[in-house]
Image 1: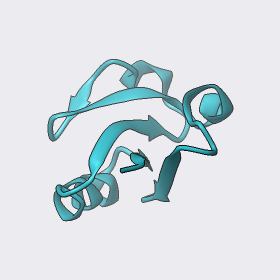
Image 2: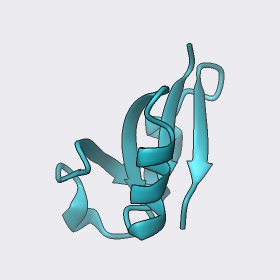
Image 3: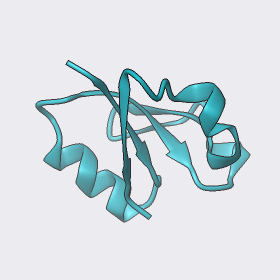
Image 4: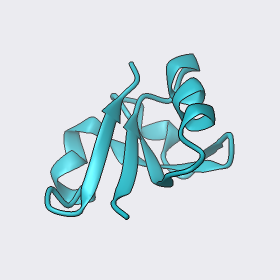
Length: 68
């Protein structure tokens, strides 16, 4: 099973979390707000910001959903 990251920490991101419970959600990626890193939203940790996506996501093993 591939890992899933969600870009967006607002209401759309929360909706995707609830809709994708059968997947292994590895973390949320905030679009720009570094202050959210480390916080949990609906039980999923904010692991970084979009600017750092290449350092966070493995293009061979991970899926990304944009919920922004």
